[in-house]
Each structure stands twice: as structure tokens, then as C-alpha cells.
Image (tube, rainbow, N blue to C red):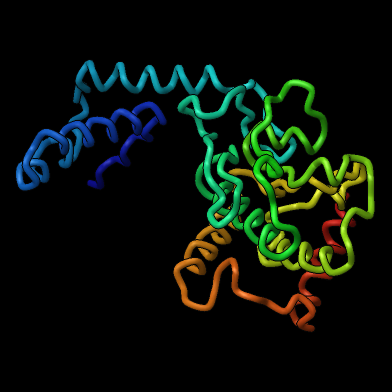
Length: 256
């Protein structure tokens, strides 16, 4: 007679298990920790310590408090604050004067930081404050609402005012298209939108799209590989690269 399948684990249950394992590992020697009940199959009637339950409850309450109650245009949860223990925090952009960019941590951060770095090295050297990430959702409209989920960035908004086209020279535009192609289309440029915003760049995929994780991992590996990563000179006019970039540009413009 086959055993019945295990019952599904709720998100809260999963958080409690992780917290219990962490707490156990912190107080036991390594050999004892591996043999402790937290590492074994969990009994059905297992009761989590009160401190663990309270800690998880506080974390969940904090996250709920930060949620704006709606999603941005690209499908991510908007948050009402950054650096408050939620998913959005201040990060530096290595190699640039931009030290306080507020982005959604994880793959969105990896991808958008890479974009800002290439912009700085290959299009225009950025000054402090010329790259803006998370923005409170109030008064944001359209694609700009993606800023409130930490999945977008505005680069030099004072130089590329919303509603104005033609802010980039041809070579700058070629580099911009090359950057978007390198990111495999997971980032969209506001200059391709009907409501033009040439300073805006945002994730064009939702949180469940596996392409985002794949691109972020490729970028991380590239940064650790000699001869790859940001700062390595590339020929944006290379026939193959230009063909890929032009094809993506057509697809994204047609999707506007």
C-alpha cells in the first residue's frame, strides 16, 4: 500500500520551518545540529517555539504594512517605502558615483544595476543623483508605476524629460539598444512606449518569468569571468550584435 502524499506547505509554515532550523543551528554544535529534530522529518504535531512564531508574525506584518495593495504595470507588488525591511533597499552601483539606488533586491537589482553601469561607462558618465529607483506610488502613472515596485530606474530624467523624443545621439542609441539586447529583452526602454519617457527603463517581465533569473545569473557569472562583464569594450556595430539589437527594438516598439 503506497504512502499518501505529503500535505502542501503554506508560506507561513515554510517560513516557520526555516526560522526553526536557523534558530536550532545557531545554538547547537554542528554534529548535534545535523541530528536535531529540525533537520529530521518534521512530526505532524511539531510546535514551533513561541519566539520563532512571533518573529515570523512580525515579519509578515511588516511586509503587509509595506505593500501598497496593488501591482505595478509589469506585475510586481508596489511598496510604500524602501529600506524598511521589505523587498526594496538602497544599493550602490559599483564603479560609479551612484551610491544610493533603491531597487528590489535579487534578480531585479542585478539586472538594473548592470544597465546603469553600462550606461555610465558607455553612454554618459553619471553624477550622484542622476539615477533614481524606487519612488512612492502616489501620483505615478503608466509605466512609471514600475518605479514603486523597485523594478525600474530613471537615468538622467532632467536631460530626458517625459514626452520628449530624440534625446540620444545615434551612437548613444546604438549602445542603449545593445544593452537591452544583452539583457535578452527582460528590460524595456520608455522611449519605445506610446507615452514616451526616454529616461525610464523597467523590467518587462513579471516575478514568475524564468528569463529574469537566467539573465541575472548570466550577468553574475560574467562579472566573475576574465574578459567579460561591465567595462569590457564591445563593438556595438558588430553585424551580429547589431542584428540582435535591431530585432529586439522592432519587437519592443511593436508591443507599445
